Amino acid sequence: MNTLQAILAFLFGQKYYVNIFCDRGTTNYWVSSQIFRSRAEAEAHRHRNDFKTSFRFIQTRSFRSREDFTSLIDNIPNNNPVQP
Image (tube, rainbow, N blue to C red; front, side, top):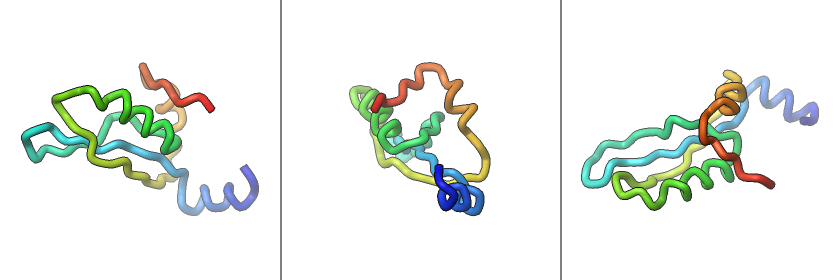
């Protein structure tokens, strides 16, 4: 991380991603319980859940937070990040 990225992270927080799903046949929308560091990880999560018929994918949203979620992300069971 260079100096500019460190300053931006301090001012605006780190960027994270979440997936939004909805229950099929209803108007119930919900955010996945997993937070991802990159869009690629969020997309991989989406593709792992595409075959499930009880809900459908809506979109991936990004957000910024000064809260450090890294320790929470690393401890999620079955969180298989995409390997570069």
